[in-house]
Amino acid sequence: MDQLNSARDKIDTCDQLIINAFEERMEAVEKVIKYKQEHGLAIYDSKREVEVLEKVLKNVKNPENIEAVQYLYQEILMISRKMQSKMLFPFNIVLIGFMGTGKTTVGKVLAEKLEMDFIDIDSLISERLGKTISQFFHENGEVAFREIEKAVVEEVSNLSNTIISCGGGVVLHEENITNLRKNGKTILLMANEETIYNRIKTDQSRPLLKNGMGIEKIKELLQYRRELYTKSADVIVNTEGKSPEAVCNEMIKIILNN
Image 1 (spheres, rainbow, N blue to C red):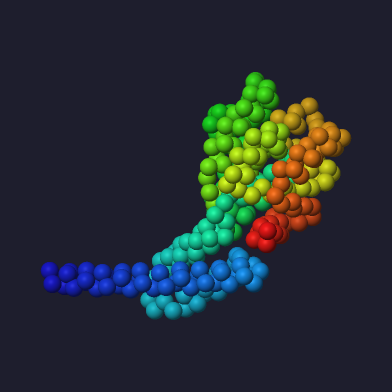
Image 2: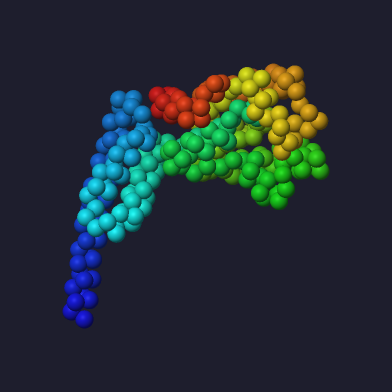
């Protein structure tokens, strides 16, 4: 029994040391974040995370603990990114723009880089309806869909530190943008008509693509919505010829400098 109690006491001591070290580490992380922000440095550095993990694993004495330590530090690095995003982005990052401009793809990459939650409004609506947006459009029409969209937009606008990807028509109702801006910055993603067409031409899940939407129809819709998009945007980013990673880095830099 004495041995058991002694071992438990040792665990308690180690736990306290771990807590103290963790809090010191998070204080240091906060200083790094502030320094990066003040000097315009890249917020997320994947190479640095790899270096940290490599250094940590080199210090593991018992090889049997390597896997567990690796898992532990991956979680610690994730927590650090989450802390960073909460400090720098206490608001939502709202992605708007025409279909095919990369909102969902870029949003997911950005959420992973910053360890922020990600919500795709169209996917959320589809999940709640129990059917695709395209099916709902066919059965109930666009007007009915836009009413549901407004309700969901109002709901998700109450979140914080979340990446929100909006459907292309969210700008059709000013109420949506008013709600989204209450606790968020709106980022308009843009691409030219040909790029949009090539990205979406085979995607029949999009209701407006039914009956074979061509480039001319895309131009027509873009022309109609162009002013609504630009008026609704706090930041505009052109995704043309850029990787999702490059778009994310550009967005982060612009947001932090605004």
